Image 1 (tube, rainbow, N blue to C red):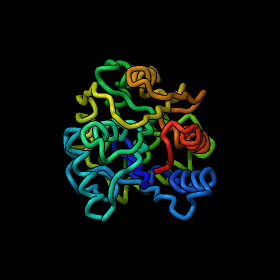
Image 2: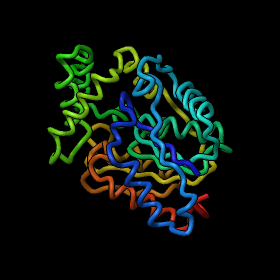
Image 3: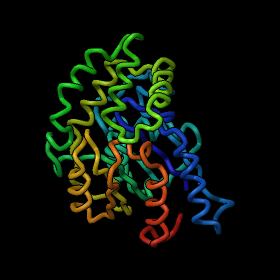
Length: 266
């Protein structure tokens, strides 16, 4: 089984940091009987981000799903997949599981939100609307890189012990593979208008952060209740939960698998 990791709005594979490696090692520890066949943990960039920053982002979540499916097919990576995704990536993962149930074995959704389960002021907390507008106004231009990444860190992270190093790394990523303002807007538009009340057939684990300043944690609560999914809330982390406490995320995933809620690792 291949684990596909999907990031959120304007973020890419490198923003996961060490989390993919940590998750692979933890799963190997939790499932030694299949250590020889333990699947790849693969962070996949969405169109307009990372390796695909020169591509135009689709303005719909289903369009992003099709792009991701084609990328995996082109690389010879065959389903079924386990999808671990956050924010916009979580919407992509949910739609993927709904539209192509034979391709998705399980879902782990982190700090995501879906209509009709949550309203606009929950999906994007109003206290941040002005800051996001100012961020958009300064999105492009090399001289704005530090400002933009500092604001993103403030909005998405509660762990600040490595803030300077984080921002410096993110600035390097931004300069290496800059996400255009047009692509950022298309991704935002895709997320804002995505709606789906169809419940996936596969097992679902929902993870959320009590300290999320960007998306209200009630969004995850509503989603888990509607889908009757397992749900765990981190007591202090921000929107970027895998950044703030990657060990906790990995332990939740491993524990969920070990409880037998998904039958097996395959």
